[in-house]
Length: 399
Image (cartoon, rainbow, N blue to C red):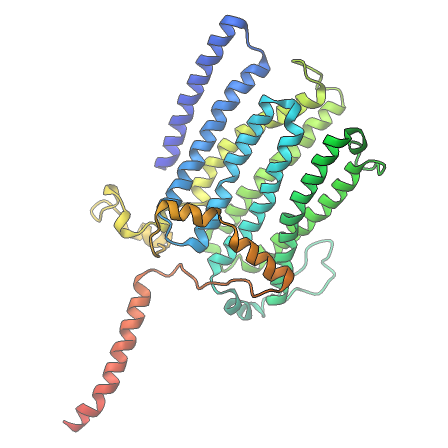
């Protein structure tokens, strides 16, 4: 709640500053609606970035569970990347066709990070899958006529491959698309059914790849969601896919309006560029809302170690039942610099892709780190006491 209030205050201050700057520029030389969009969009983008960076900083500060938090931080970077990308496109509409595809690459990476986060919540996936063997998953339409899917390692590997292939194919398509636009833009652009242009083939491959990735993502969620209920997987899934949903469908909406003649050339830009600017500005505003939503779906409180709680969380003011409901997570505390390095290095991604596609090694499945710190110590102490009691029995019988 405190982070949400702070985000609201910072955003109000940023908007006030942006309005003052806009009024000052307008009084001197006039400011077009596009100019106002750039000024206000910049203020809103900074607010969204502030909210996300504060949450990222808190996760790095309380980086006690790397197996989970590295993926959370990677997902949280989606908001700053989308906000900066959209504002850059708003500032330079003529370059947006080269800027926007790179945020789509990060979208594919975030989908991969999401399934890895779900598996990190589970812990030992191999030990869980036999328990799910008697819980077959029915296929969704239009494949509902197939026999139900039995969760096992082979199925999970195929579903992971379905998501990973999108992460690998999307950057290749972006490079291919960029080369064609630079070399010969006329031979690339065209309708989705104009197979004399490269654009139709890129859209076809991209659509197939996205569909397969979404199929794998949904089934991974259906297999694991009951075991992940306390982690709010649905909220996390919606917060990720909603960004993509709004980005795609509002772009389609503005393109339809542009094709229908509703959106006309303005401010020295053609109708296509004006359509893109409207979409980018709307996306910036949406990033502020998703930044606030992430405070709820990706909380950091459960990763705080007891020694790092602040004054307001002391026993006389802190509700212990609330900590138990959050599911406190403990582990070795990392320095923020080390935590950031752990997050940005991609060796785990490379090894995971190699394991799933090249069968080199086995996908890493680490033990569940969500066990409170007291539990292992208690179990070890009970075992030692049991062993001591066993050793004392002969002595007692002798006495």
